[in-house]
Image (cartoon, rainbow, N blue to C red; front, side, top):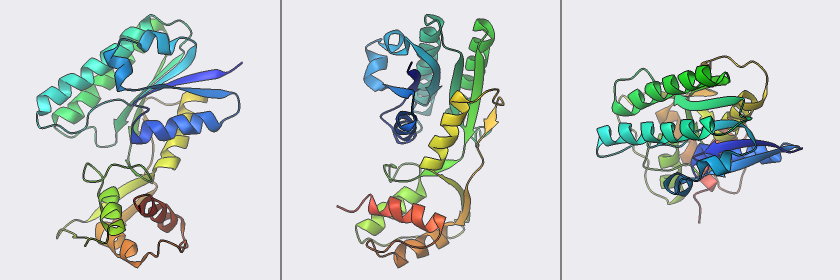
Length: 239
């Protein structure tokens, strides 16, 4: 019998990678929940038959930060309401960030959303896992949004200069495929910790990332895991 895992935000970068990872596992199938499913009230129908829900949908940037907070909490409440109507769900995962403690409406929405999933799990007698994730990069990432890696890869693919701001320092990163694997394991393996902190895979100087990208030939695979992961991201923007 197929084991079904629902992924909200499946049209996005991390959610899409997770859905593909689930589908690659024999005996498992991803149920993709996208923005239109929220607006059309289809969540109870989509969750039917699922054993776990990974909630990744949300906004991370807005010109109206307080509206962003309200939007993210409204999405969380829609998922919670649908879970209450759906027998058989044994675990809910809430996607947050390792930067969750920062003071901004976005980070506040992550703290509050995770608390609401914990309360939901206690109410229903199921498992809750708040997942604190580092910054992800890889093919399909959105440049000029919240990833310097995706932005640099896009600029390099277009032959445009890479500008490193003074004092840019280092960034902690994880390849999106590595992150998707960790999320899949948290969804299906027994007794995960709550919260679960997914460790970063790399810590790289921003200037060093720029130098690597400027050295890449799109036709020559580089040595080294980080170099290869960065090269794949770079190549994904070449048209």
